[in-house]
Image (cartoon, rainbow, N blue to C red; front, side, top):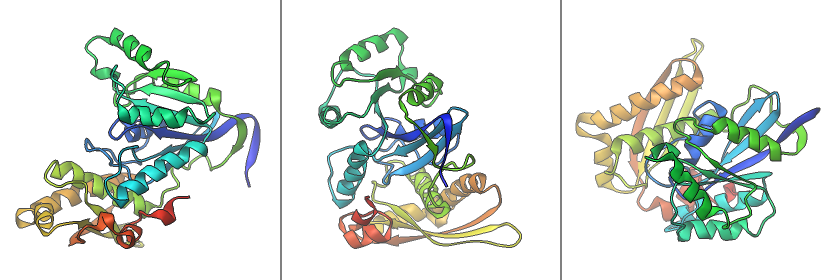
Length: 305
């Protein structure tokens, strides 16, 4: 039962922006735990990831969406649909941009959509820790201030945690009073299987660097916890070409072993216990343009609500 407490606020907040502006990094920092995967590669987030922040002021439910970009395949179309539909479903929108005076076609496309809705929009100028002269942020604020009728403009660094407490304060300012949707100890609505799959995909993206394009997915075939507390996980990394399979496995299985060791550490941190992770690699050619494969791997029109 939802229980409303007088003076408490609660609501839904979406993070939008072009790919690779730091949406997942910011959300992870705001909730104080790693749920969404991060990578230097664009379009890392593929689904709408829901996380929860609770304190004495109330509860914020964050929706970390895929970056809004020009779709090149059916997977891309699905990702953009997921991102754009959240704009009408939330109480506050965080639009993340990088510190720059150039407002490109991607940003203008987002601005067009934001100008059609009445939801409060907070412009977040991320990565200000990269500025040689901190005062330069004033020129970026000036460049963006008339693009949309922003409720607030906040320069910050998601990576360094600069100004993130101010952002949380401002989010609560615009949330309505209402019930707590989740228990206080809830951090995400994502099943552990899905989080484990995403953590494995993150490690693959990072360790493979530029050798493999974005055409990989991860499926969890088995996940069981023994009586002694050890969790056995069997997962498959899906790629699009035979040549990619060889690169993912690596010489003598070395790369696959690295991916597994790195992912297991993060999975154990989340589980709070020991994990036994086994990885396989399979080729599914052009799966990103196959609705059947996309649905099997957890991406597809059926998932967009």
